[in-house]
Structures are given as C-alpha cells and as structure tokens.
Length: 145
Image (cartoon, rainbow, N blue to C red):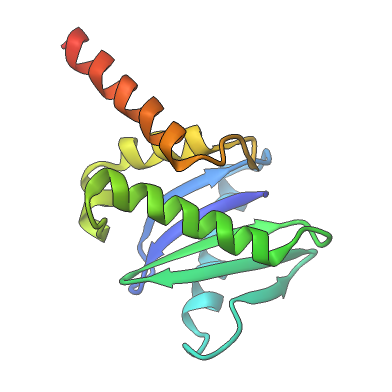
C-alpha cells in the first residue's frame, strides 16, 4: 500500500498515512485530486479505479471515505478487507466510531492504524491482538500521567 486517506463527504481530510516518501506539495496535490475524483463518483459505481500508475480502492462508511492506493499488481479485494478490518478496529475501540471520534482522537486513530499496518503491509491479522496492544498502551499512558 502506498498511502491511506480518510476524508469526509465534504472533502475534509481527517487522516492520512503515507508509506512512500513524497514532498508535502505532492501529497497535497494527490490528496486534492483523489478527494475530488472519489467524491464525484456515483454511489453504485465500483470501489476500484485506475489512477496514474496505481489502483485506488475506497469504501464509504457513514460520512467517511477510506481510500487506499495500491500497486498495479496488488489485490483490490484484500485492500477492501484491510479497510474493513481497520473500521472494525476503530468500531471496537470507540464503540461505533464516527467522524468526530477521528477528529478528536486522531492520535488514537493513527495508533490503531500503526498497530495494524506497518510500512503499508498488514502486520497483525488478529483483531484481538491489535486491541490488546492498544489496551496495554492505554494502561501505560494512564500510569505515566
């Protein structure tokens, strides 16, 4: 995976994770272009699209779009599954996640993503193990504060 973007139906970027080195200018350009492209698509259209030399896989959950860029030879269905697993992890942690949870707890959303994906690759497939690691980090944080 090259990057993951989370944005609202209004086009507001809520989370971005880049797994390839790009300049800030290039990241902004890609983000603007992709947000416009995905938001312009009709709800019944396919969640995969070819863009530049990449494949874009996106899924809308409530008011948020989860959008990933993958290599041409990567599997779109596995990427959809990765998006779904991330949403499930957020749901479990926040108890029915919503856009406000991401806005006000963005550091937790990043932390959950980092426990799940490493360098754009799935590092832990077990939801239980990811949630346990997050729980332990929360306990440690409470002890330190």
